[in-house]
Image (cartoon, rainbow, N blue to C red; front, side, top):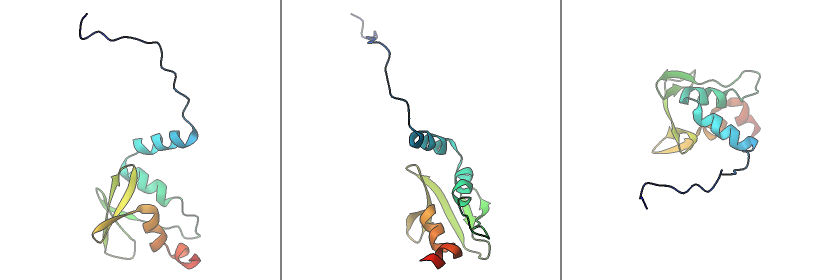
Length: 103
């Protein structure tokens, strides 16, 4: 017996990934900037919500000088808020004027 020999038990039969799993895989492969643009582009307002890219992982709202740090943490696009982190979706819901009126 040699320690480096593996036993082959036949082909692994894994089920086909569903649409949700395929979408998660696609999102993982996108760069941070592409993911931010994809999330921001979901806005269906008459005047769409915008985030201006300042630098690598740095964004700002168009009419302010405040810079927001954006990172990917555990497959989620997160924004640095105060001393913690918030999802980009939740951050946009708080700062998008169209969504603020609905609440």
